[in-house]
Image (tube, rainbow, N blue to C red; front, side, top):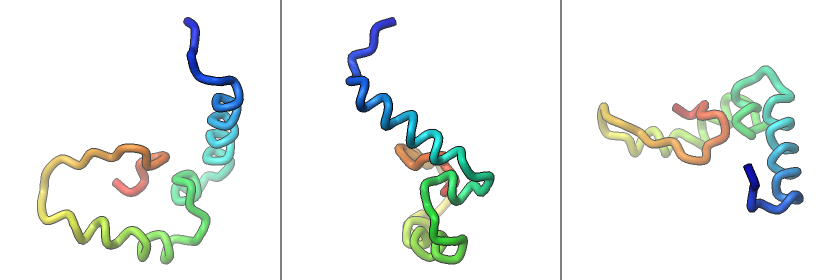
Length: 67
């Protein structure tokens, strides 16, 4: 299979993956390094916007820890 993505881009993607997986903490694996209290405080507005049960599409949020 041939990829059309530049090698430099693919190298950066691999480096990000390594950075996310360097920790056992799911908060840090989600790309955040501010501790659990700050993590929740900065994401609470997203949770407040959800008014009830249903489906939620999580696109581009690293490991999906928010869900």
